[in-house]
Structures are given as structure tokens and as C-alpha cells.
Length: 246
Ligand SMILES: [Zn+2]
Image (tube, rainbow, N blue to C red; front, side, top):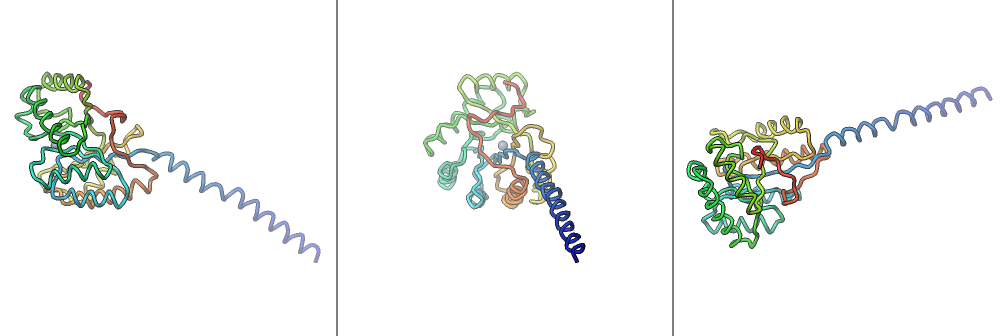
């Protein structure tokens, strides 16, 4: 009898010891996984406001995610209301281009700056925000402009305290045929896994024909959240990714 009790006791001790050794393992594994993806995700939406902006803003509000909108010149009341909503809901309003007419704005650096200033003044008039955050239409590696003109633009921007921001992940959602939401989301997931630094800056388009945008963004919010990433908007303190060195 005494032998049986002793056997039972040693069995209990063995089980306890095994638990102590085995239990911490998944915790360590989880920490390593989170560490690997401990990145900040910046959603940036070019070319808005559009017909999908309201739905997009509603989604961002629902998930409490802040983002950056590189807007174009809005000429309607609805567009102005959306400028205001972007600002009122805590997102960053960035300057893209008033006309987004690439063949005109890239003809000379003064054309570019005149177009940008027109947008700057409009955004200020509507929102009372003087944005210094901008993005070259097509990105600073755009081929619609000569290297000389682009370099001049970069110098002028710097002299007037504008900061231009490119990206390191693209949804390639500006193709002629609109892509499905899963297609866009999968491209971004794949490409973001290759980002070396801590910041994942995603280019997407808030554009009338991009009706799949909102669904793609929701899928991505859930994906990055699951990976332990946080979300943020671009501010003047954000270190810019720039294809064209200023
Ligand atoms: Zn654009």
C-alpha cells in the first residue's frame, strides 16, 4: 500500500515537472512571433476624395485606425465635406496634386509648385490645416518627368518645408481593370513580409473605380492586427521613404 502511494506521489511530481518544462514553450514562441511582426502600418490613400471615401472613413472609424489621405483638388461641396471629415476624424490630410495632370505638372518645377500651392490653399481654406506632407503624383520615381525637373521640385519642396513621402508596399490597385479585394490584400501581405524596417507604408488609391478598396482594407486591418502590428498616420515626424533623394 505504502509503495502504491509512493508511486502515485512520484507520478504527480513527474507530471508537475513536465508541465513546468512544457508550458513556457508556447509563450516563448508567441513572443518571438510578435517580435518578428512588431511593425507600424501606415495606410496611405491617394487621389481622393471619391465615391468610396465615406465608406472608407466609416471603416477606419469602426476599427479605430488612423491613416493618411493624399488628396487632389476637390471642386464639389461633398469633396470639401470629406476633406473636413478626414481632418475631424484625426487622419492626416496630405497634398497630392490639384489637377493630377501629370503631363502638365511635370513640364517644369514651377508648374508643379503652382499646382501644389493651389491645393495647399484650398485644403487650408476648407480645413484650416496647413499640410506640409505631400506625395508626388506617380511617386518621386515617376517617369513622366525628367530627372532635372524632379530634382528641382525636390529642392523647392525642401525650401518651403514640404516633406514628400513615397511607400514601400503597393497594392498595385491602379491597374486599368480594378483588382478584386483579396487580390489587392494578398499582394500587400506578400510584399509587406519583405519589408526590412519597422515601418510598412502602403500605397492604395481612394478612387472612384476602386470599389474593392474598402473590403481589402478591412481584410488587411484584421491581418496586421493579428500579427501584432499597430497602425499610424504620417506626421511631419515620420521618417519619409523617398525614391528620389532630396
Ligand atoms: Zn495619384
